[in-house]
Length: 210
Image 1: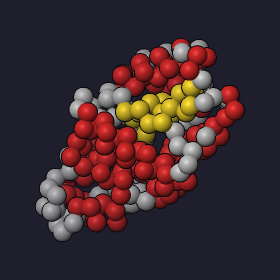
Image 2: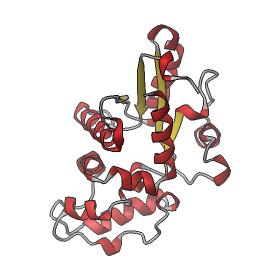
Image 3: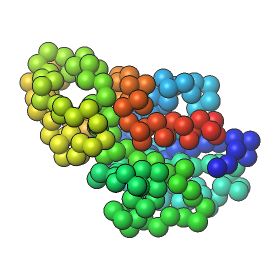
Image 4: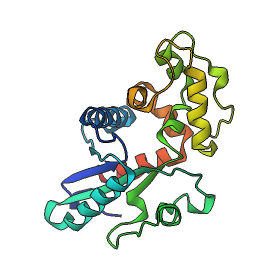
């Protein structure tokens, strides 16, 4: 892996924010807050909200091509969408090749690509108290999955359980655009890191170059 002395800028290209500038701003702010709360204050990566996963991959690849000139090291963060088999936990390019048919760029290492397993909402399950506070009266925590291994819960099950848990809450049913990045700002970042090996892997690799 590269050393921190080799690069002037660390950029993290993230799947998120869709096509709306407002949501991209919220995405950048939420992830910046998350990184501050895990201890990166004063040495933060630059967060780039790219929209779709394909756009994040495209922007990441473009950064790699100009790295010698810009002195930038790029990281990529996208949803895994599906479960990641154990033998590919530290080989995310193989997962993305199998699922998305993406080709690993020659200049990219496995340490530079990271997965939200299986989607960002899985991470919220690490801090159900934060969900309760955020949604307020009427939130039904009993509707959330009982599996404490949050990375093994299918994306469809996570989203359905959040909708069921919040249907009668003060903020209404969970909506990705309305709520996701606001929740990321509220959850206990260290609870997320401790509950998610993929989140911990991201923090450890960023820590090496920040």
